[in-house]
Image 1 (spheres, rainbow, N blue to C red):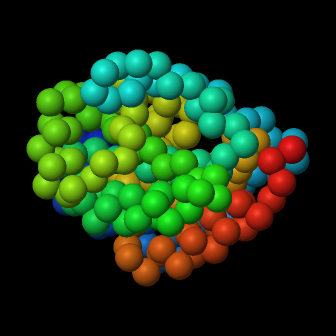
Image 2 (image 1 turned 45 degrees about the vertical axis):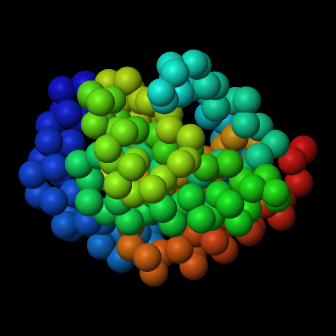
Length: 182
């Protein structure tokens, strides 16, 4: 757990993940290749919903395409990404896209001012001690976007964010929405 927190602190001090060399366009291209296969196992984890603390099992979203945005309140690119993901959620909801903002902050009290400033109303999930982000998703920088297919398998993963990435994300979402649920 300590190494992940050190990475998060280093990212905060450096202005967030976009300044890290590993999050340049070539790195994004390699990280965005299709990850899932017919043999890959669906994700299975439970986190708490914000603000009430009710449990949310990611397995409950089977049958839908899921976009998980791993973010933190100190992450400047997250302020740009989350409102755009909210727009994607509205655009694709009727076709079966669910979008969640998976927060890794240690103190949830930082979340309300962030959401108010960004005007984001997406469902927020709390990743206590970054257990899911670190151990399950193996997140290395903020923000990280994970796309799950209708079977719950990780199919695409992107580190960093820039507005020009949205076209690629939309193409991936369209591809996953076109796949049958069964």
